[in-house]
Amino acid sequence: MARPFNPLFAPLTDAWSSTLLAVEGKHKLSNMRVLASYASSRGIEPSQVDDSLLVELESAAKAKMLPRPVQLIRTIKLIWNACVRTCPGWPTFELSVVSRRKNPSVLLSALPASFQEDLAGFMNRSSNGGRFTPRRKGPRSPKTKMDVQQKVLQIVTMLAKRGWAIEDLVGLKDLLAKPALDAILGEMWAEGAGAECGHNYNRIRLLKGIAKDWAQCDGDILDLLKEAERAFREKNDGMVDSNRTKLRAFTDDSNIRRLVNLPSNTLAALHPQQPTLGEAIVVQSALAVALLLVAPVRAKNLAAIDLTKHLHRISDTNCYLVFPDHEVKNRINLEYPLPLGTIQLLDLYLKVYRPLLLQKETHALFISRTARQKTETELGAQIPRFIKEHLGIHLNLHLFRHLAAFIYLKRHAGDYETVRRLLGHKSIRTTTLFYTGLEHRDAFTRFDAIIDSYMMPPKGVA
Image (cartoon, rainbow, N blue to C red; front, side, top):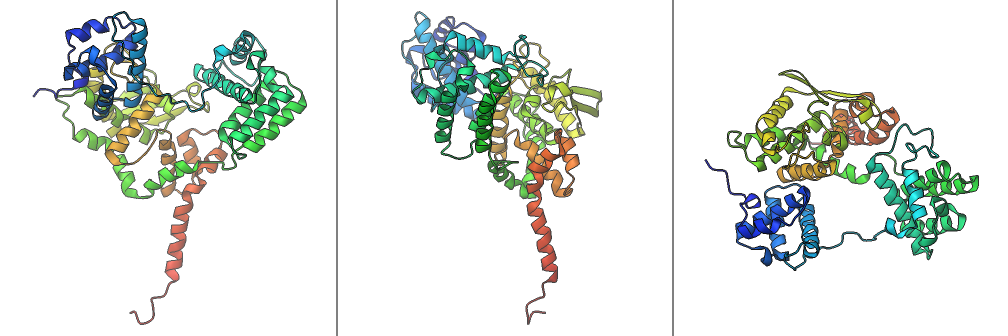
């Protein structure tokens, strides 16, 4: 039986093949090939590409369950427009790209070189011999550096909104001069409508770190930042309301049952004798769900699973998922024994479906169609979409951790120590802070049962 035709991987016409020769870089070429294949299947040549074709391509990408279809189309548009400007002979029509940034920040390149150098020094403070806090144990990760840079640029943007000439900023310490800091805090307060705001709280914490460990500010500035930190700190400690709302779906045991059986039910609908690329992504999603149900790790650890480092195989029926402490947020070793059903699903994925994605050798468990290790962002879009399509329930990757605590506490009320160990929390206070509220419903149910036991039947009723 022949595999079903997939227009996203159709052979290219001669016109498209020659056009793509101008595209440099594997990433750009792999994205543009999706457009070229789809257009070739429709008989559309490069000169006939327009915005309506990209709308149709996005629908096809969603139907074929490609990861992050909206981002894929946006990337294709950006690459196409870049080719219009740089590739001789490329069609001259530019595709429309809508900016998703509501309040764009000042660009780093717009700031003086001395400010850029000072910011780079602060971001690299634990590895360049400069001023740094002894509490840091190692260099910042690239992701953390990017986060710090974005927050600093957001703070500079707030200063610019208050009329300051950002070209006069010499270094980070200029942000902490009393007049500048008053302007920044005023803009933050206006932006947050005079209420607690998590984003501004995190920006204040960054400023406090700069003031204390880098700019060596005096006590008055630190006191002002501490006061601002208290003002912006959200008082609702623990789990946010949006996550509590999403977890409410699992107060119905039937939804827990549907989720737990989703991986096996998904496999029952497939035919491993004739596997396809699309099915490989489906099985990959099912495996991720199965792993998160028994090993509720953070998204970063899930995406980083390496076949040689993290999966310790003892026998055909005995396998552990292991993360050493230096790879875990709280510096705690995590070790999860995998049940037999999950091991069997893992073996099927590795033997039948993963090879379809394996264009080059890699030890990564979750890979893309080009054998590139998937990021936590990619899995964070792929897996919730898979669950939503099959169960109609919204469940993001981090919510699996809350769900694990919820399910366990339904059967073992008050056993926070086990939940702490399961989730790898360093402090029992974190566990109780987040999950005490999950037991409220069961507490009320048990109390209602006590009240019902005292109820007398209505008069006249036997």
